[in-house]
Image (cartoon, rainbow, N blue to C red):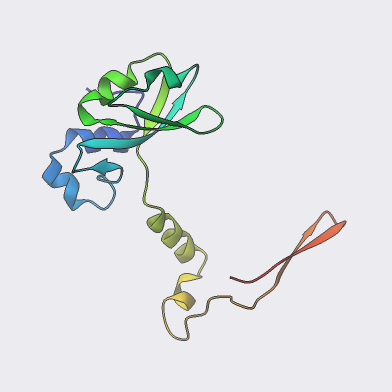
Length: 138
């Protein structure tokens, strides 16, 4: 049965066989095959630091978020704790930026000669007519 505190992608990654997970570009992200552990993004409340142990590594972020690394076998038990509100796996940023480039029509000019980069271009952002911010090109 799916765990309601875990995102659908993480539930799927945990349900399928490891061989199938390895074939996917997204499902294995966050899993370390050599240690059998997952690096997960956790939304929590209260004191998550008390969950640190020899097998659970907790890196607290801000606003009730943390990165938790733990063995795959402990994920279900971990998500049942009262402090844990929601758990998701990390995503590959490459695919996110690639989709954004394609949607904004930037991709065609960065994928072929002359490989336009925007280097040397200045961009001005006008904020409520009171100030101008100049940003250097990439």
